[in-house]
Image 1 (tube, rainbow, N blue to C red):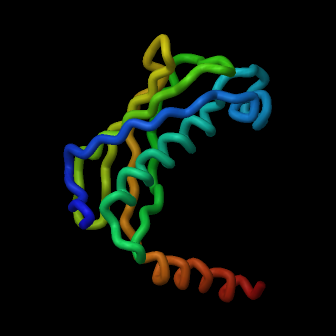
Image 2: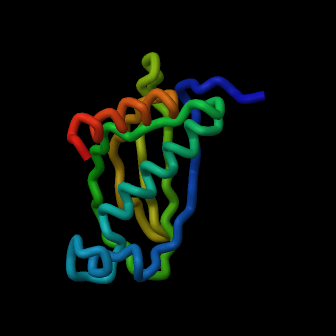
Length: 135
């Protein structure tokens, strides 16, 4: 039985920084440190995972807003723990508080917002854009 999605839910998820996760590798900077776009991906992935624990098979969430401070650099080889805290549920809107820590210090904090959608209906609407585009 799935639990109901509700404020107060928390998920922690660990990631390891590899060379593929660096600003230098993805082109968002020139140094071999955790890239901010990768950090954002990990935050979204963690919030997605938390929500999916409570949704049925026809539902998913889509990210609609990310607002983070990336306060400290993390080198290749270090572990990063993402902590997602569901602050508010307003209908289909989910508001998360997020934090990230490497093994030495807090590296990020901020907010993330997702919406619960029906997979089929969402994709039908998205694919209609292609039809309107004529391709």
